[in-house]
Image (cartoon, rainbow, N blue to C red):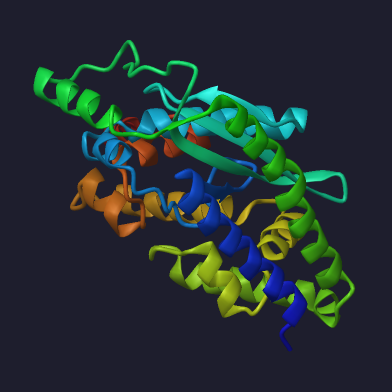
Length: 285
């Protein structure tokens, strides 16, 4: 049975996010403690979309991961610059004195004279450079005092809504069935890990508030949902890489990864070598 109050709070959270975007032109997303998106990335900033089109978004992912870890480890909010000169705000999501994720807001320029920059090792054509610089100038400038006010709003008001939602659910009958729910979620992932899995839709499918699901999944399984999905994909990729009829690009696609660079990074992190090195070792045996 649905907990109407809990679901109402989540709907209110979504509405607040939409209102902040509308009135301040600031995009907000929610990430887990590993820097993976819990809610879809709703950012529609042309500059950021062009960054992704030019295959430079891995710099953004790396920065998000670094600041997520800093925010989680220190349980502190921060205002920082993205690799391309935009202002970002990150605050921890705290439930029962434990950080379970972060709120990330940004894709804006601050009134403190933000300027377009490129990471030192980025090598792009002059046409791409000037296109990015042109789009950067279109990004709205937000007064720095408003940015600090938004940081406090995210830290106190949004956290209050999320923690209240947790307390309601924890007192409900749903909490008694959490082991069963987590097991069902695992079974669903085990069958569908090669497909795109949206955690928000997963929570709706199992009729449970998203933050409660992600928190309890980690408590029971010992991994975040995103980490569990990636682990399933990486282990499956090992089987496919042993078959020389598949190219690495095909393996990436079959296993459900959208980006080969990200796949290579996660593969090396998990197994200590790159996919190409893994194949070379197989051939040399």
